[in-house]
Length: 137
Image (cartoon, rainbow, N blue to C red; front, side, top):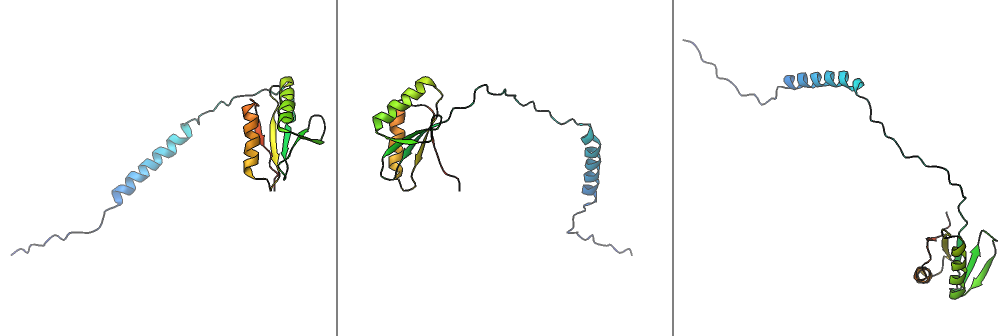
């Protein structure tokens, strides 16, 4: 009498075929990788500017909400101005140089609302290139 053996189910995964496939892929990549040329990126070139950038007009908002104007191209002295004098001075400067930048420097204790008012006045009078000036730490 021949004895029949029952087949037992295995709960294991045979990983040998996966290792074989992985090694074949590794060999393929090792052979083809040196043959591939990396992509070349052509970056745009710029020429040097013929004119130096103009020094900005600095609108200073003091702690008491008064305004001062400093033209760094002419002098480092600041002069107190009204809103209309500020607009006239900036318009006069921008008529000479249309790319004249204007920066707003406000005292640390000035309410942000005052800075926004100055920006709004400048924008309503079509003043171009307005920025904020901050002191680095």
